[in-house]
Length: 411
Length: 140
Image 1 (tube, rainbow over the protein chains, first blue to last red):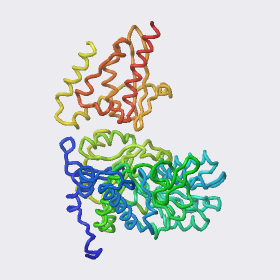
Image 2: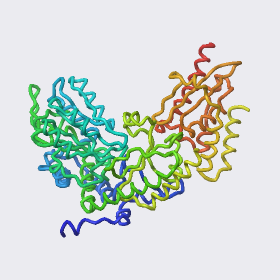
Image 3: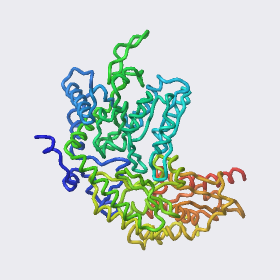
Image 4: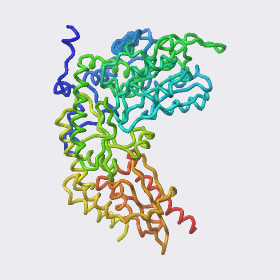
């Protein structure tokens, strides 16, 4: 079969693959709009988890026995599948981590070791705490300087300000591809090209992008790309750091232990080659294998059609919510996707979230681990509905009616 | 009415509700009716910071009993505060310190006092009891 024949997009068929979507909460059909926090899992992944622990469980990379060899082969096959999916040159460039946060911390620690006092890290004002705090810690350790590119009221990066902050002193730009709170899609290609022009490396926080659009790290030419398995239909507890080989080779190991060494003596230890240099200890084997399955599932989906569907959902929801008195959509970037965040004058987001929950609707309320962004908008938090390609317009109709009912109770 | 009787009364009040939304409608009304804490009393030392909503608690002791007023920026949290104060206000420090708040689970609101809920209510109950314990130890 050609790729074109393989890739399909039919929401009804896709929903069939997700058992978690077919349940009732407080007697109501579940509407799951908290995909920005974590996605539900397809049968392919669920079955693989069950199969691994039922029949295939063994430690990898060390055993000579059949099961260990098989688990090793599958784990490494998952790495290759991810490599191919995101267009990395080599599977050695795919490092398994605990998730996006762990990936960013790995870079902050290890790439950070190559930096000196006065070197600058440039982030944006819309970053998740996990793309702020590791850099603050690095700055404290190494005397580096953290710069923050501001955003406008629509929630878009102000590129003139970004350009002004970018200089020869900038050693790394670390920026989110898509804002988890606003849905803003950042112009990462432009950012990467500009950063490279001054000799800076670029880390793309892909926690909110890989599940929504086609990603090719070679085309983007980013130096690092980080994401979490659980937001891309895989298990929790595992994620990926993509890094360019020449860069990863130059970076010292992050953690010491088994698997990451070549030879250990009490006098001197030599480190293993990539990717194992960065994977100390027994990894999340089932997680890695099942993340591979999540990408197998994704490979069957026409991501362009999925992205279009998700953008339509967000637009549809926004247009209806926008008519409610006192309701303000937070994040109105021209290029945004699949996230609708809102605040209502005089009503706490926690109250709206609690009432939506009782109507069977899962949303996220609060600051979404982006407190500086809440300070910028001067609000305590938002209600965030975040969509995946398995969500439907009918669900949004129910959601909007539920928001209306909640607001009428709270006013 | 003793502590258990006050709680039984609340449980009975909640029995008439058929569904969750009716229950929450009532809690919201309680929140709207709760006497507001004076703005000048919304100080840092009275604040119990939840991850999402915030609670202010003012406690004082007079005529042998504890007296509480509280407020929150979220109305549902405020409604539940109203229930907690109805039970614990005007009780002796010993009663407050030892109070078993069984009504919360009976009316199905235990999630609001779970450590994961992050609305400041669990912190508020701890603070209520701590204030009572302070008076017990000061008196002894």
